[in-house]
Amino acid sequence: MTDTTGKTEAMTPLWEVFIRPRNGLHHRHVGSLHAADSDMALQAARDVYTRRGEGNSIWVVRSSEIAASDPSFAEPMFEPADDKIYRHPTFYDIPDEVGHM
Amino acid sequence: MYSQGLIGADSSTTESEEFLAAFQSRIDREEKIEPNDPMPEGYRRTLVRQIGQHAHSEIVGMLPEGNWIARAPTLRRKMALLAKVQDEGGHGLYLYSAAETLGVSREQMTEELLAGKAKYSSIFNYPTLTWADIGAIGWLVDGAAIMNQIPLCRCSFGPYARAMIRVCKEESFHQRQGYEIMMELAKGSEEQKEMAQDALNRWWWPSLMMFGPHDSDSQHGDQSMAWKIKRFSNDQLREKFINATVPQAKFIGLSVPDPDLQWNAEKQGYDHGEIDWSEFKAVVSGEGQMNRDRIRDRNKAHDDGAWVREAALAHAQKRANKQHIPQEAAE
Ligand SMILES: [Fe+2]
Ligand SMILES: [Fe+2]
Image 1 (tube, rainbow over the protein chains, first blue to last red):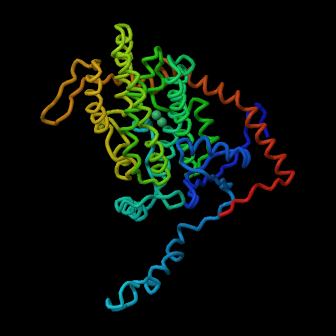
Image 2: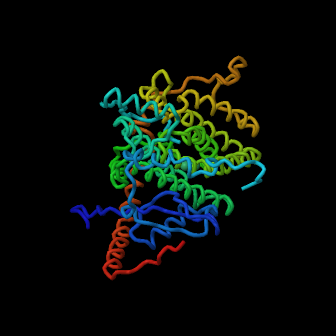
Image 3: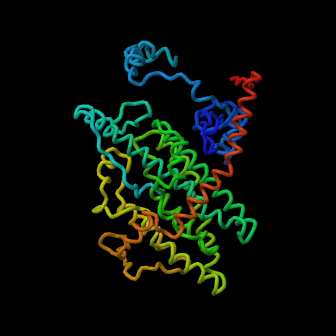
């Protein structure tokens, strides 16, 4: 995919990078980068995001493969959780004499 | 860095008063703005411009230092400089990614840089003539960058703030390696000391210019402050930098090339001499010593790498056609 001047015009795909700092922890989103394929994305992620011992495992995901919730519907999406205080332990009265529960 | 003296951003915006007030109150509550959130067009435009210029500065900033990697005086110095320049490339990448979340593509930004249409920090249009310049850049240029980047870690735009946190973590070794170079030279032979002083003489004023025009002459400072993109004014950061740096120069026996520099006990800070803004304007508008070389070198690097990008994409295409199944991530 080159234009008439012979310069590369094709877009190199965007990847999201997730790194696990060490065993026992979740992979965490750390940023993104461009790479032609998953091998090169992993290589670039190692070079860019783990130069100072930031992790021992990397995931890369094509950004276009991520489905995201719509921020303009954040209220109807997440508000129902706010008034369900009975989901929290402090909603229930247990006498002190019972001890820790 | 490098973004403090933001060059020519248009923060004008056309939304309703109500929309702007609602946005401003989110900012005032110190809520972070994330890429898909509603935001004024002027806010988006200012950020694209600022983050873009910042990213370009990191990338172009590799060139003056790259000039000395092969000529570093010892293996230790060479490893440190190589690591620093590699970091700067990474900083460019984090920043392009942050700008991309606002709907501009990296290809587009790269094209603007290569065409000479994009601005980047004026500091990188000065030549690196001696090894001491590498010391001066780390100490002064990265030092000024840190002053600017620390408050950007609290910038209202989430992706920019997060990129800055990574950058700031990496930045402090840059300044320390530069100061160490200057320190060694300053306690070396007469010639070495002269070389260090000469580098300080040449880099001092351009470093002060990195913070951008005086507040009284800066057109977009106020809106950026209100939107909490910026947290301090150009002059505030410049003074902070001077107050931190002058004692460091004294400590290694070098003198700051400003005859008007004077401690002001009342404000507990230094008063400094006039900055030559005509030089700044000339460099920004393309008349610096190295403007043409920098853009030419970036174009060469980009063109020389074209076959690599094409081959990588062709290989990826071929692999995709073979229905290669990548290793699945497993929790
Ligand atoms: Fe940097
Ligand atoms: Fe740096």
